[in-house]
Length: 205
Image (cartoon, rainbow, N blue to C red; front, side, top):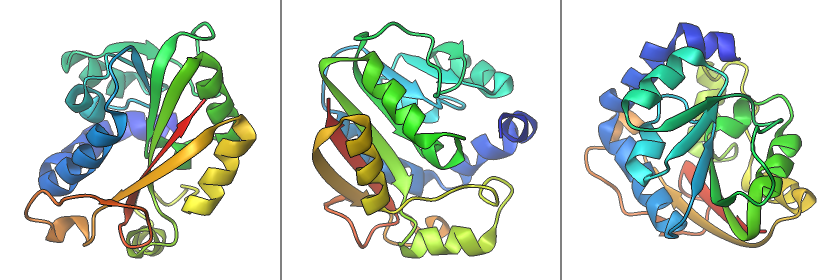
């Protein structure tokens, strides 16, 4: 998948400009979910759109071209994959995985690595396109360049994987209640899941 993102990194980044209010609605839900000070890591930082907006200073990604843009946005980047993070255990106060999990080869291994690098009271924040939502179904049918080979998760599946990785104390927030191109204001997120296409899942180590 890294070759795909290396090739189409400009197209990927341009999506957030074209769908500005959908992106900002996602950021609003994520920002409230993070709400912690300390050292953070985004796994699958891409072009740094989310890290820069959320104040996450360190990001890792296997796409060299995307990392160059993330660096321009002020993110301290490392090349690598989520299944084998190049960081010591107990390093971070929180980790974020935003959209990325549907593209990785071994999602459970990524979550286990995220758990390992968190400190004793660390927190994980994930943003996913809910497979069972209207938006998840739309993307699965559309089969875009980026999503044609993606493995989407629903909230129950993701929660199960997080439990296997050792996480506990779950909370959920949802955003995007229309297709991204139809969103013309920053939407207010809602607690829970089931209506929004974008779901933020938080858990504790």
